[in-house]
Image 1: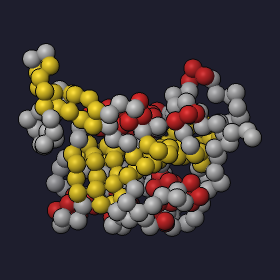
Image 2: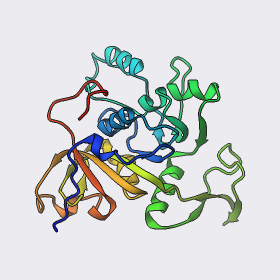
Image 3: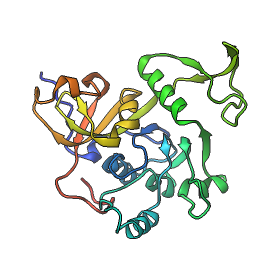
Length: 256
């Protein structure tokens, strides 16, 4: 039987995600980087008790609407921009393993910060590089590694510290999730992926760092159309591919 990892809808793609799952959420923070439709599908499924990992915790719907209005003269936000903050704001997230759980200023509080202050979510703060390496270690089958990033800071916690070359190093463990939801540009039915622009960041890193990687893509192409030199994520790291709709779906409640 020929390999075909393409699923018909986003709801089908996340149908087996269970309460309490750990999910790597790709993206760096911008609207073109998040797997927005997969996030929306998780919101519709209403799974709870999730642990999410990623760069940023995301924004609420009202905050995104405000940002679209204020930034209209500088850039156009797409109507189908849904961030992890949608899941946080709906109470579906129990814990975040994040590099930037809150914004640097005090003018705007994202949902995760509000819930953290209320004791309703748990936070594991981790630097971007250490987070990326923990996910890469999971993909490579490496149980743990020592890094010079973190000794003497809040991220050290109860972690083991050893000295190498005259510097303290913190032991970081691999971070293997149940699912990775990522955003890519093109895919073939085998699951080979290419990326565009800044979407390559945590999306490419998270592919393969979980039991099941689900890729949200702009375009599906025939086998052989992707230049092998341009394939960033090889097919073995991807289990499911789902194609974004031709026309933007602006309401996350709309099945697609």
